[in-house]
Image (cartoon, rainbow, N blue to C red; front, top):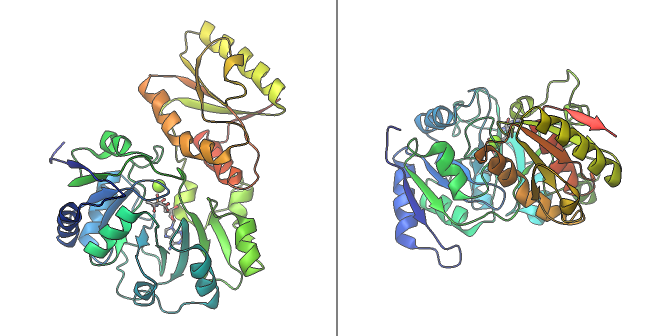
Length: 351
Ligand code: TXA
Ligand code: MG
C-alpha cells in the first residue's frame, strides 16, 4: 500500500459535479480513477497518455501485451482516434451505443502503443452508465479502462471488490453501487472483411447478426481448449478465476444436483471447504457445502449479475473447492458459460 485511495460514494441519479470534476483532474494529470460502468467497474487512466497506461498495467499486474479498451462519450470522439470508420460501425453505433459493445478499429497516432499493448488496432466502447459518461466528459475524452481487478481475478461488480484488489494502488474509486450487467462487454472486430466476435457478452451473436448480416465468432472461443490463439490477447489467460479450484458440472438438472452432492461429500471427507454455485430451483437440494443461489435458472440476467460476486464471496469465506451447476447457452448464457468455463480452467464434469 503506497498511496491513499479515496473512495467516494456517488449517486448515479444525482451526480455530484464537484466529485466528477476532481476525478477528471486526477485523470488529466495522469492518475488512476476506478469507476462504475453498466458491465463491470473499470480502472480508468487517460488513454492518450502513455504514462497513465503504464500505471494501469502496473496496478493490475497485467501483462503489457494485453491491450486496453478506450472509453468515449460521443461518436465524434471515435473519428479522431481511428484511421477509418467502416459502415458496420455506424450501424452498430446507432443500435447499441451507448452500451455494452466494444468495437475494434485501426488506430491513428493519437492513441499510443502503450494503450493498445503494441497493436495497430484500438478497442473502443461508449458506456451507458451516467457516472462513466460524466467522468469521460470531465477527462480528455478518452479513458483507457480495463476491468478494475487484479489481473486474473473475477471482474469487480461493486466498489468493494475494487477496493479489495486495488486499494492503496490507485488515486480514487467512485462508488456508484452495484453494476447492472455484471459481465464484460461484447467485443467485435471490424478490421476484417467479416465482423468477428472476440468476446461474448450481453450483446449476443444473434443480436449482431440481426443488424449486420454475416458475423463470425473467433474460433478460439468455440473450441476454447484448442491451441487456437484468440484474437483478443486477454482471452488467452486463465481469467475471471477465484482462488478456489472450480469445477463445472454439466448435464440434466437432477443428475447435476446428485453429482454435486456426491462430489461435495467426498471433498468434505477430505476436510475441504466446499462452495456450491446453485440456483433458486436447486439451492435447497444440497445437503452439505456452502450454497449460493445466483438467481432463477431462467433468469440469465440475474445469474450474469451475480456470478463474479459469488466467486469472490467464496474466496472471502476461504472455500477450497467450488462446484458449479452449468447453464444454457442461449442469449447472455453464452457469455456466462464462457466466463464460468474460463474461471474453471475448463474443468468440466459431464453427468
Ligand atoms: O465491459 C468492459 O469491456 C469492461 C468495462 C470496464 O468497460 N472492460 C474490460 O476491459 O473488460 P479488459 O481490459 O478487462 O478486457 C479487454 C479485452 C481484453 O481481452 C483485450 O485483450 C481485448 O479486450 N482487446 C482490447 N483491445 C484489443 C485489440 N485492439 N484487439 C484485440 N483485442 C483487444
Ligand atoms: Mg478484465
